[in-house]
Image 1 (tube, rainbow, N blue to C red):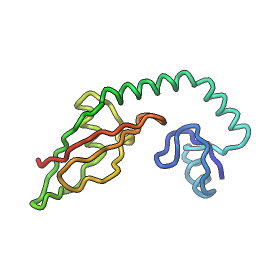
Image 2 (image 1 turned 90 degrees about the vertical axis):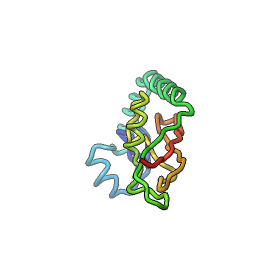
Image 3 (image 1 turned 30 degrees about the horizontal axis):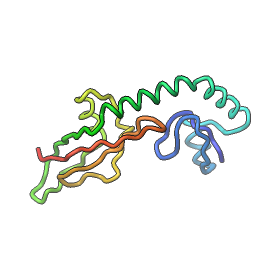
Image 4 (image 1 turned 60 degrees about the horizontal axis):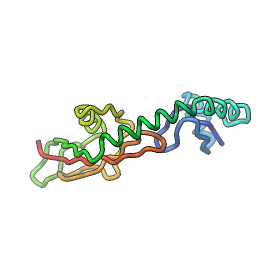
Length: 147
């Protein structure tokens, strides 16, 4: 079943993308929750028209995302965590903590736009991926330090 996404869904696609999903997932979840619409010819034409009209706005958003990525640059964050004797941390360093650390530096990044390729479990250096725009991804290094 093909659906057109009405908003960004992590792991599936971005707004206005046409994606192929299993029929049950599409009908019972995506469409009923308002996350997608059926990809028929009328809806495709409507979405194409919306995309055409919003093209200049999309370019502005992309340029803003590039500017934020450039400002962040090679910034290294320090995330404090409770640590045991072996160096392993209690609990986890979360995307919310990284979002808060970025907010302290003046960057408002939603926690849903942050992911970890490797989940931090010990003291050390790690990388967080920022999904700032469909075409703009940025890596931020952070260091887990004992509190």
